[in-house]
Amino acid sequence: MNSWADVAVPRFNESYIFPALNLKSTATGNLVSLPQYRDIRMYVCGITPYDATHLGHAATYIAFDLVNRYIRSAGQMMHFVENVTDIDDPLLERAIRDGQSWESLATSQIELFKGDMTDLHILPPENFIGAVESIPLVVKAVEIMQNRSAIYELSKDLYFRVKSDSQFGSRAHLSFDEMIEISRQRGGDPDRSGKENPLDALVWMQQRQGEPGWPSPFGIGRPGWHIECCAIALAYLDKDPSDQFCIDIQGGGSDLQFPHHDISAAQARVLGEKEFARIYMHAGMIGFDGEKMSKSKGNLVLVSTLVSSGVDPMVIRCALLQGHYAQDRMWNQQLLTDAQLFIERMRSALSREEVAPTTDLIENMIHLLSQDLNTPSLFVALELWCHQTESGLQGGCAGELSRAIDALLGIAF
Ligand code: ZN
Image 1 (cartoon, rainbow, N blue to C red):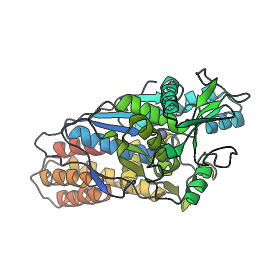
Image 2 (image 1 turned 45 degrees about the horizontal axis):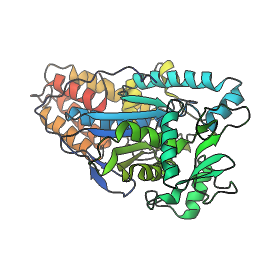
Image 3 (image 1 turned 90 degrees about the vertical axis):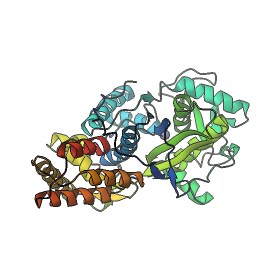
């Protein structure tokens, strides 16, 4: 499907040297360097289009946008793919609850999501792929896995044997009982009788009464969620047989670490016969006023609600960037107030005729981003520069700093 409108990124001064971008992989807990001087392949799990776009979504997509902006500013090509799960159980349940068709719910929420992404200056993916349009890719992937004895049938549904991949479960660092419990909470069906292993994953679901279905060699039905992402990522990004990984970055919110990303990776290892991702990168969760932000608690803060109440999307972006992407953190009104004040202070400092030196500051910004996107320290450095400028220090170039902040952080003044 069509992605959202492109966002202009200022050209970066080529005299700046970009070190390799180091990101923490949750699979190992280690910082891993992305390769330099070649294209980077990043797959980020998208939304299921209902209740879009809350601040947890925004924080996640802003984190991966920083990766995209760093790689592009460093002069490398970024191949970025994102999916949208436009058919899934939660979407169907919400459509029934609200008395509307699942198609119209999905279409309206996808449009809302695209508008929010544009407002937040998130660079669009090269390929934005819906679950429905991915069905031919899923069918092909399931057929290959069948030939590799990784699939079995249960009442006409097809399941992936997670143990087909010897590394299954190694990325999540959970006990078997924890895996079962988390799987139960996050859309899995570990209690279904007849499964060989309670963690085995549905790859093709036979059409249920009153639900949509699409034709396939396995009968009319629809794809499972984990195989959807895996099939899209491999089809669009795994194009270098000489690389030891199918892709460089598998990204999403930390609630996708298990089971979604572990099962996707296990399926990809069966299909691609090598490790799926060089780095498994996960953004923390955003809570609200001391509580976890969730649909069930009804305390979701939506980007569109804030914007329609007059909040500048750049202030939202700035407020979310003040925390570290991987940390779970709370959202509150004070963050918006502080971000608003910061932007006003930066604008005022940047509009002066003489500003404090900027070259070292920009070098430091690049260095801090290269260390697992250390935005909290970066904002401290920017505040210090404002203070120096207000104190009368001279010798910098305001235009160059403004362009660097726009290119690297996506904040346009
Ligand atoms: Zn996914």
